[in-house]
Amino acid sequence: MTAAPYVLQGCGISVRFGGVKALTGVDLGVRAGEVCGLIGPNGAGKTTLFDVLSGIRRPDRGRMLLDGADITRRSPVWRARHGMRRTFQRQQLFGQLSVAENLLVAQEWRGGGGGLAADLLGVAGRRRRERERRERGERVLAACGIGALGASSAAGLPVGRARMVELARAVADPPRVLLLDEPASGLTAPERAQLAAVVRRLAEEEGCAVLLVEHDVAFVMELCTRVVVLDLGTVLAEGAPAEIRADPLVREAYLGAS
Image (cartoon, rainbow, N blue to C red; front, side):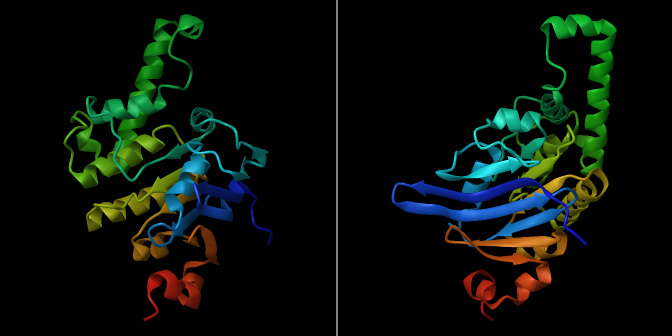
């Protein structure tokens, strides 16, 4: 059976920082309904690749494709408007807002915020749209196991709760592509199980293409259907979790030869 086409694809991505090669000719893609893991030792280039895919950094060479169209020069805002979402290693919640309001912000771009569009929508329409956003946010928070936190301040949340709020905010407006940068860091075992359940549901039921960077190899191997290994800015291996576990190059470079 022919594999489905990639939703998001990086082709020949190369990035240099002065004389240091961070990425060299990296090819990577993720398909709709797939959870793809990206692993590798510190300094392998994982976060740099995420920065390129999300539009924060432009590559020295190579292209990014979304549904086959070249988006290399498109901004992060453009990519977000076309269904790409990303979380970061460092938490980036709006601490002055409540948890529910963080999710409202994530949905605010859809439909515009004022002007002629708002005039045409009318008061009743704006109220309906606001209600729909709040209801969507409540459903997403419940699915992430943090439904009781809606009214809580986003500032000062425990690390695990804050990461789940970040995940909820990333999916408050349904994404087509989701880039998760170490989402399980600081989570308890039950929170990790909840995270895995949410990610699987996004992929399987909503057809989201998920690319996941995570240092917890066991978590990646259990959750992902395909794993890509980066080492020194190049793709060392790619395949199903069982193939990656058995690859001697991967075991030596990352997983441990023993």
